[in-house]
Image 1 (spheres, each protein chain N blue to C red):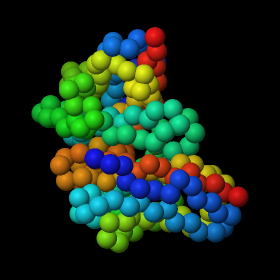
Image 2: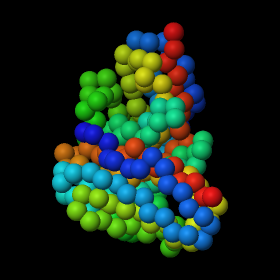
Image 3: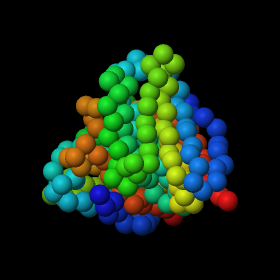
Image 4: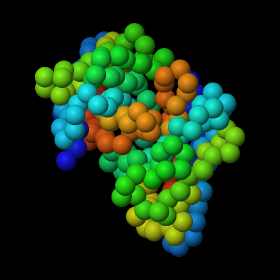
Length: 110
Length: 119
């Protein structure tokens, strides 16, 4: 199972919005609404930010939102803040009871 | 509160085995699966596999099939991951994570265990 494709890096200024894409195939992202997104700060464990494409767990800011079109899922962060600077990973169910992560995107807040 | 607490760092020689534990507290152990995820230094996340503490069913990633075994002990509410025939490219931080089936997402993570494979 190949990793999902994410841009290596994105950047934005405080207050702006950014979007991170996550491209897979019809066997994973495109075939199921089980896409989740994780935030990871250096030296820390990942944190769940979005599940089932566009749902936020309790406690996650509503500045984080998710969407999907075809084989590509997206994470949008609005009103960028310095604390949002981190690595972001998407994950998808793959239909054969396995899961796959994206390669990760480093977000820099300028 | 819900916690997953992992065992400490390990240093192993190539060809050896390592067993990492993940002690669960704060919820009913058999209600959620446990996935294992690893991260090589400077690299991304890799899903290794999943186990159901309810019935012991497992699913392993293709890359590690034959070298990894995941188990649970309901008496101690602990999950274990054993990786055999270690190679240098198995050097990574290994995480356990609670898998929420309805969401198919990992909502609570352990702190990670660094496994170093070096001669």
